[in-house]
Length: 449
Image 1: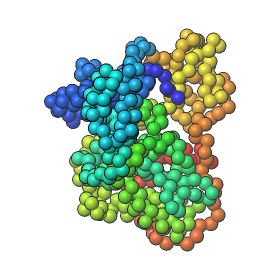
Image 2 (image 1 turned 60 degrees about the horizontal axis):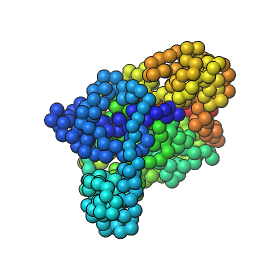
Image 3 (image 1 turned 90 degrees about the vertical axis):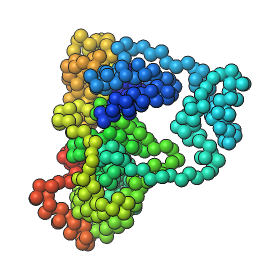
């Protein structure tokens, strides 16, 4: 799905420069950061290690500012790659660390130099060990003390995750998955909703709704689940200039605020859902929206001493303005690459499409909304090349979206607390303040029925 060589190269380049494109950096700060990035070991389009000069980093930054993500793609489909020796060095270093976890990075570098004649810096090994869970404390079973971290401004860091806690995992025999996005500084829920599956499109809908309501964050901190590591999500965030960071496997401490948030959901919201009894996803989302706005956003946080909404409104903020709907829609399109056949057609998920005859034999990129395979835009060398006209349409949505919403239920049971919240929230909606699920979410749910 859109996994051509040029796109992989662009994603690798974005991973290098994403920290340095922050507009809030002073020239001196950016210069020091670029120098630091040049000293780091990065991953190329094939996952091999690489180093990048400061000159190249500045060139990539300039390209991104001029033409966005697509300008990071190479002009020609050629890539020098990285010597296999680099992989051999790191594989040997990993084996030496596992053999004797007490060995320091400097000691391991010395062993490699003496026994193999290969030179590698201590800093390179330290980064490699940290990235791959090979730090000494973890291998030796020692625990670390983690200090408290808080983002300096609203929008600096959004933490996102999925949850299907007690009482909420099943709905009339079907799945109900909560995705929510938490602003690190304020603890405000940028957006959250229940979805019928754990797929990547559900998570992307949640992210799109959060950006529509709040703006574009600087960093998105996510787990390593399938929905959070998808190629399409990387493309979406790169197009919008959002840097992705993932929590290290086996180190949930970095996600403490999100875990605490879900504990609050379990102790306050899920319990009431069990009491009320909910049969439809729509009903569940209405209760969720009411609880978020009437309770969670208004109750002071024990750590900050302020209610999330109050802290959010007080700022400061680093959020970038939400782009116009057309630009945002283009950013969330999925992509796939295909070679046009001699009969000037391309295929996608069992469908056959006619394209411009001039594209025969060429590699093209298809950009589409996964909920509507009847409308597909064609690009060649990142330039519009018309549309793909359906010649044989068997699938109307991407196969990853074939899960449907829960069936219509029987009558609900005793309703007390959550109905009171829902009534208060309905009154607030009449006053013009809304936290209802995004319209895209509602439309997608209705289409899947």
